[in-house]
Length: 261
Image 1: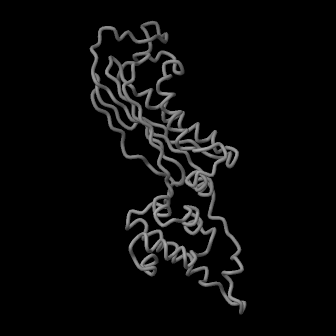
Image 2: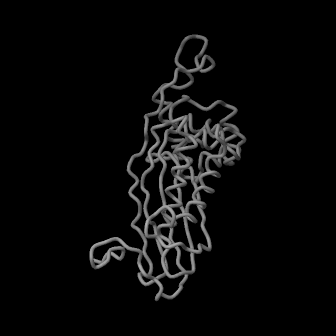
Image 3: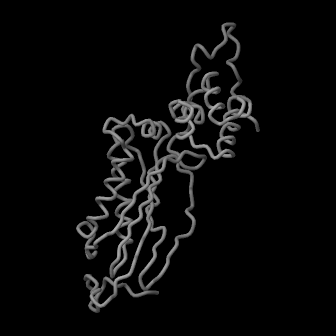
């Protein structure tokens, strides 16, 4: 087991003396996940949060935080960081719903930038919470960890693949069908509940098979991303004919192909 570098011979915390070390190129990448409900994620995707552009603000906050790491974390050395990038990706699949944050910091120096990357990811996640807490206070920040680092005496480190446990904060919200979805004769809606679920799962498989994300596909089709989210999570029983036509046209397939098993 490696010796703890921030503890001296008397067991007291101290700043490590790095004056004898040579400068090398170093980099580190960290990640975090901000779990939320599909409804909140849709508001972020559509830029409908009252405070403004959530992802842009989180990226700026993460970059600023990386540069302030030595002022926030005791015993960290001030570093002349050469680069900080923060990426925020909307995630909505069978296991996860929220924002995945990846932060990378680089430096030419005598000590590593792991804490700068971790601080950037953490503060970006906290900023997302602050931006949307008025909509959902039960948001969970998780999976903050170092993904990889390069440079320095210890060389290269790569974390094992993340374990994506089920993160959904709420089951799909049931909704009564709109009047337009119920036939005038009082019979069943356009499809039975079983058919709705089967078509929804087929639609989800189509997206996966074609590498389609809800946000990018909806934007290309000229629709609100909430149209896709609402259908996938059962808040609306089916897509309208017009919505199906736009999505099929964007994906360059026939409408029936959207639901083909």
